[in-house]
Amino acid sequence: MKRILHRHYGAPLSVLEVENSPQPEQVPAGSVRVRVVLSPIHQGDLLGVAGSPAAGSTTPISEQGRGPGVEGVGVIDAIGADVDSDLGLAVGTRVAFFPTSGGWSETIVLPATATVVVPDAIPDQVAAQMLVNTITARMLMRAGHNSLPKDQMTDVVVLQTGAGSAVSKLLSKMLIDAGVTPIRLVRSAQSAQVLSDVLPGSPVISTDDPNWQSLVKQHAGDRKIHVAVDGVGGPLLAEVATLLEPQGTVINFGTLGGETTDIRWFVPRALVLKGLSIAYWFNESAEDRKADIAAALRLANSNPELFELGGEYSPSELTAALSHVIERKRGTAFFSFRT
Ligand SMILES: NC(=O)c1ccc[n+]([C@@H]2O[C@H](COP(=O)([O-])OP(=O)(O)OC[C@H]3O[C@@H](n4cnc5c(N)ncnc54)[C@H](OP(=O)(O)O)[C@@H]3O)[C@@H](O)[C@H]2O)c1
Image 1: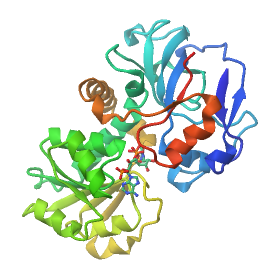
Image 2 (image 1 turned 180 degrees about the vertical axis):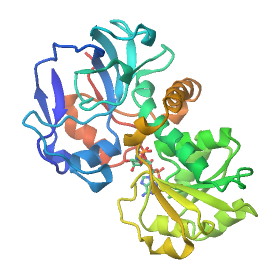
Image 3 (image 1 turned 90 degrees about the horizontal axis):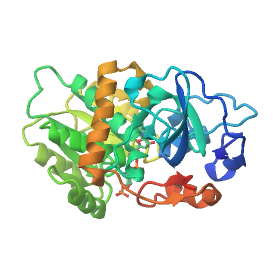
Image 4 (image 1 turned 30 degrees about the vertical axis):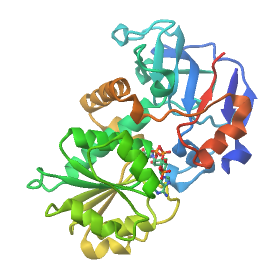
């Protein structure tokens, strides 16, 4: 079987390679083997390959190599003993999977509890990317809620940066559905237009407008901004900090801007800077995690337009697949193992 892996941390285009490996034959108790159809290439996957601090500490890579890819969609082709029958899994069941490592592979073996049965109505490209982004957005919702002062729970305004990103769009939808007003920042008037068309219902402001900060204040009116959710970082984050109430909270989950942030702006206003990572999803309650999966299935079904479709690349198109993500072409890129 083909799998994509690396043996050194470094630039993804230099270190990632395709290898033919034996298919895993053993399926341990409580696990399933999945013939992968699609696995998305997330920005975070490439940060992990590069060994960037934005993806956490690196661990030494064994001789077998390190396989990136944390989620995807595929079809179960073998089931180990003692798999809970309540999961509804059988050979031939189409499932989304998360979390795993080595998802960029024709076949993977993973705990049955890391799979979710996908209804026929949800297309492969949506199912393959619905878990990571929705779960992250739901964790941001909870973190945002917990950051609000107890007496400021109504008529809430939240500032969002990089609002056109996959996670941010899902978060905006959840905020709007919860009666919160997200004030959404994007980097160009064109992005603002695209985003307003896909998801209307709250202000979208381009930060290339020299008056963007005044526009934020105008939209907030007399409502105070206690929380900002940021996926960009860098100089923008420092500017966002100046728009928050003293002792407000910035929740950062991404580094789309690729630059470091000057935190000197945070101290004089006693702001809280909180990092959020899906790596800590298992620290959330079982009830919340179950609700997160249900939300992913619901949104994938009701709002597929929030999951941007994109290019499918076979392993032999490795360079084109990586370039899609590195050059920030529109839509999600997937490794495809369709036969
Ligand atoms: N913490 C976690 O657990 C977690 C989970 C998932 C993702 N992430 C991280 O969160 C970030 C967003 O991920 P994603 O998958 O949602 O991103 P994405 O969908 O790949 O984001 C792409 C969009 O972001 C916008 N963008 C790119 N660079 C920007 C910049 N410098 N300023 C403002 N907007 C910019 C672009 O919009 P326009 O081209 O329209 O301007 C682009 O369409 C990434 O850094 C990712 O690694 C973290």
